[in-house]
Length: 549
Image (cartoon, rainbow, N blue to C red; front, side):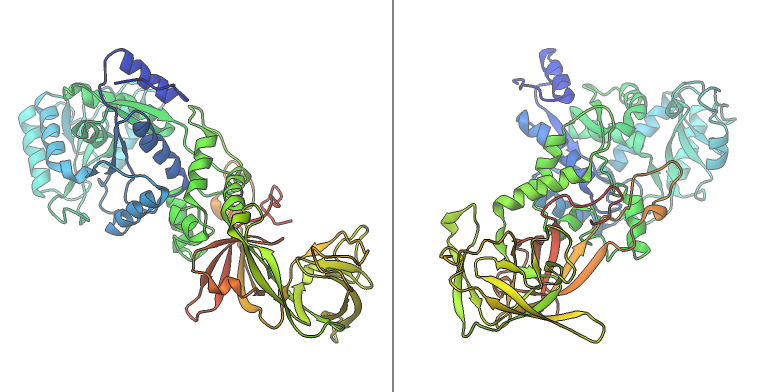
């Protein structure tokens, strides 16, 4: 097989293996555990595993690490498949660790027969207490020197269900003085009575991941097992299993830095906690960094792949700014999303000198003139956003104020003549006049204005629920700080806005750039009402604490 021009350290290692004749075809696997929904960190792992195999003309399997039935569900398997397909990857084979349970068990018996594994009666707490520390050797189990015959009998009785959960386990016999804690006679099988989502109650003992991992890789023909950096300390055990079971060729494990993003929960355990404690509406909540949440939010899959490609594959862990991800999403939507207008907090504007209605034209996409134009209705009542008017404007204010001018996008210049307020002094209506001969593209009024704002026609505009989001986490992480202390409990804001009717006519899921508001996805609720959900802001407008400025 041919090498490629290496763009990262993994590809350089693979090229070296090709030069040395160690591989003739590249085989990788994407190995999620079906105990939750995938998050954006898994997109990087997809890119590494599926992308690397594709570059070398090889294959990548979808491998489900289903060795812990107490936490795994078919629901998660189905969600993972859907997420991978949405991102745009295809797998060569769909494989499960449970496909190899009998093989994994037989290999365990082989280790026992070779004197390299033993049944231990110590409890999990006792095993932990005898492991030692980073500077002190561990203490050997009193059951370490059982005979091969006794170990085989006990292990078979474990499988037969003779012993209660936690009463016995199978441990590899390696070295209790090893400087690597993972090599101090690690547990490779435990008793666990829990119905498996595929095998039911066939098994009451299950292999540990560190033991099953190299066997499953070997059974699939994996040449390069690409893992995140936390598995680096586990690599000696990965190699020990492969060497002592005689794997030839033995798969090679390579570790890369996992994805970490500011203001973002990157742990399935904590994401599950957010769902269970009701901080979000579910795994697909648009604020969640899950793939299903990002899809529901309206983030294009191409933007996620672009982001993961740009941050690269490196060996050292680091944290990426969330603003960088948002920039990739923004770039994609700026090029592809159609334009429209909506106002979050409608303020009524009555045009006292304008009568009748007319149709105005605006570009569907200013960067793509080939898409043409669409019509906008304009009448004597329009709505602008409350934030675009001020009774007490600051210096250099360029939006509408009393006795001030502003241009309505693609329409006319208007002048504020009168402000109507309620008994509390709140502005409820503006009475304005249209400047003569100021229509866009044909303006001969001679009046120059610096401000241009969005608007919605009062006669044809539709009610819209507009959802705006902030970060789930408020600020940077500090030592000893729990996610609960960092939660932004005010991360979803809902507005009763107005939108141009075009937005209610297009199909659900279509993204739009709402002028001066942001990028939003169009959907409808159960009652058929228009809902516009924020995908990303028009610019990075959050401070370091994750608060909208």
